[in-house]
Image 1 (cartoon, one colour):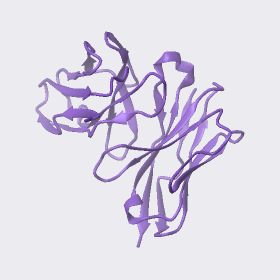
Image 2 (cartoon, helix red, strand yellow):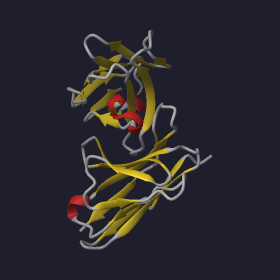
Image 3 (tube, helix red, strand yellow):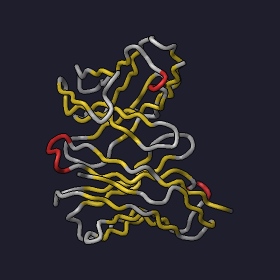
Length: 112
Length: 117
């Protein structure tokens, strides 16, 4: 049981490049979340999903896109990367009955 | 609007002593949940403890306990017998019951705890 996995762990992008951050969970959780954490700050919600085929915007969705074609996977797409997107990105999941969110190890992204 | 406030940016505690990390919240929904997470320097987010708004007892998990004062809208984390490994950032979060099925978490800005030997 791997829990929530994220790839890659680290990535450096040039301004204007695009990439997809991968997130997979093996706990059959309906709810999945993408957060970003800027240095010394708390978590900000980018997008979330309450089940396959259903996604919605969080606090800071601009510059990002998501899809949820399966229960397990919730990739986050960055189009036209900007320096303001330099951050650590966390994926999390939880089941529909409530309770805590389980977090992946994070992806450290630098845009230069 | 729902909000979580952690007023202590940084705290110090001597090893083996107890420490309280403050968290106040604001919500108009009678059904809500409060969470504490630990983030060590390695970066992962570790769930510590949960308190539901209807729970009669304060939550406890090993050395962690939650001092839940509903009338004051506070949910302070108490760590007993601090250990060097407790040095980390601690985040308080609230489940947004008003959002219905969405069940997003609202996060505080965190408190940095340093345990001194």
